[in-house]
Image 1: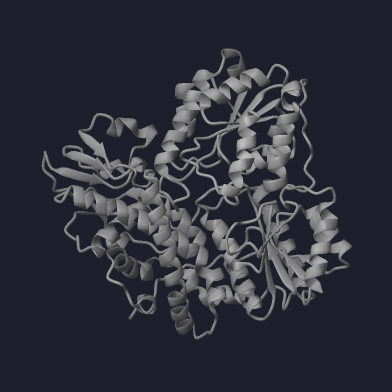
Image 2: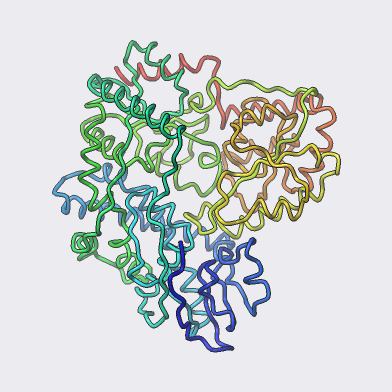
Length: 601
């Protein structure tokens, strides 16, 4: 993104100016600046905002009651709008698919779209009410872009430039059109790399594509695996053990061509939609026709042609993470389901299911599936009969890593979340507090253990400048090489420290790796089914509620990690967690073969 114009902001000294994004070249720094959220104040660009006469809008979702009300409202809107949108897409494309098909094809995108728009509108509405005469800038309409698919829509939603577009379009929908306009060039496609490694990878992918087309001819009546999270070796064993009744699919999706938006077609999406007079619904109806990805409108036919390359009439389709952004796969699976194919969804990670109170993607996956395979847990709601605990596909065959005093080093694993939230599961205000806890942990660590620590950062930073923060509060900190697989770094350490509830925590405990985890229990509410398990982990000292408590536990455990980790109550708590949330059977291959045989009967 590069700036191409500097507007006359039209704001005099002493007036309030609303900064909606971190693009500081578009702030009027001579005014009293109001930051719409923490996402505006980049740590690495502190010089741009530290000395300003400024204030910041409070984190609207830090209030648990307001957050819960918003979560319910978003869910209601999603369930109301989904069939309406599906019916209009049927009409536009001259097809006759049911609600299950459209839930699968557009549901994931639609939920995140409503969530992001709800969040952006709520913050703007709050700022306009609190500062009635406030001024800002918006993005000129000629700079607006439309995502080509649901993945691009999500990736763009967390950028500064696209957020500037969204905030401006919300203001326009509210009738606030008198703001100065800026022009910037938004990057509309990823920059492709080059080199021999990329060419070799491309050749391997072409080979996989040809192999999958061959398998597509013999898919009838079989269970097709697509992004199953089984290892390739396990998939081969399943195919052999089932006599070809279970087959992997390696089909590759081709790039959806980007075309000019057909606004006449898009406007038909919301024509005559029965709105209830709510301001946000009005904003949603005005913005959605332009924001919906091209794969659902102009590119729908192209995606449909790609979907026809998948196997015909399988008995069942199993996938772990193909349901979100694989457009051709979703169309194919949706069409197959309407013809009697069972949709099987298997959990693909730890932190998003079974534990947290706010888990929209868990809800989406269970809602589209005929059978959902969890890593050990069962829900306590109307979906209980859909969910079947099974040996975790992702963890099957993992090497065990019991406590060993001959190992050395502490591996500290951090995470990252977008500055602009995608759903109420991830709150930017909470993440700021999370970053502060990292500094508190390091401040409580002894100098000797600091020297033994390796920090493994999340591959994406999302504009939080996390590496710089670590270097500032802990000079000399050693960072782990993220090009190495996590499991290799985990094995190459004596003790694992995790500061969040993510998949890596499940991997470590399932591998019997000595582990200390800490997180704020007030900002990470647990489902009732998880509270007892985490109470046991807390009593055993594996889970701590403060960074200082975690640092103290590391100091106690590290000198003789074997004695600490193998203490009976600690191992009992670990096993209780694994049985419930990271289940491994003694023979996972046999367990899954039996399940697939049952399905094929």
